[in-house]
Image (cartoon, rainbow, N blue to C red; front, side, top):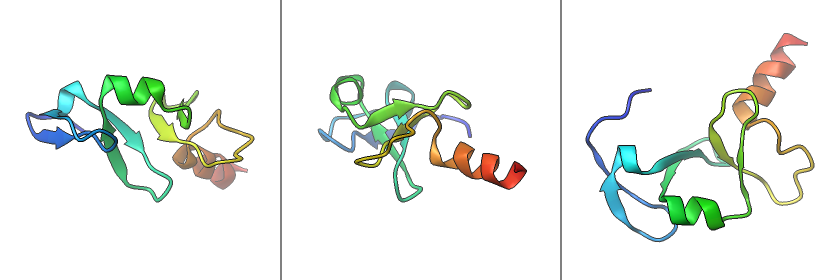
Length: 79
């Protein structure tokens, strides 16, 4: 997907900024949330997918935070 010049709001702190200054984060429910640099770096439940490189919100107790949910599903489909 392509980032434009839309104003988005940080999911955590409410900071409003252009979408290209915020990080898109895949949520547990499959939605994309936006987070500022301060919030994404301080949230221990944010991981970076080793396959697609996108940030995702890790479920509590998740023992395999290496791949995001989308990449895990693709992997399952290829088995």
